[in-house]
Image (cartoon, rainbow, N blue to C red; front, side, top):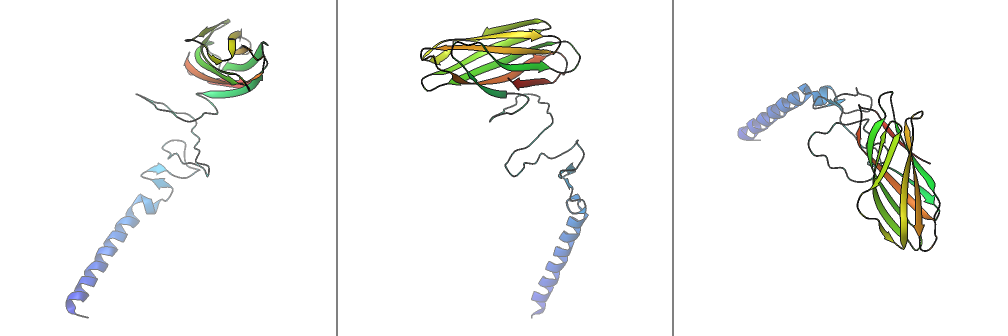
Length: 202
């Protein structure tokens, strides 16, 4: 082996040792539970935590604060965009969902509620603005009912101050007199204070 090659190898070894020392001194190696100073494990503190997905690709976040624009896609099973589904008979008033305001503060909130239903021969999509101010409840359709073989879809709300909730009841009338599978999606638009909104299918 020539002296030139030997010197090149020795220089390469020194360079590799220097790089290894730098890595060992970084927090990536010294503390494998941190990623750039953030908790990267499942048991770290609640603050400064990296969100990780499970085997199905889902991630659970207790809460978040967004400033500016926030783009959310896909389905939601709780919190914002809570969806419930129920069979609603033809021309029969059916209590379909409860919307409760947590805490002990004022009972005052506004929600955007969509109804999407179908049967063998019918389809319907409708959008409503629903509100509660203590014992007063309001329901107002936004736009025009979109439906196939649909005569009408009516939504009413009953306020319960004792249970701090609204109960929504829907009546659907269609030309085939069929029951529909009705999916309801509730999005809170505004609530007094920071109360938690809970949506429960009936």
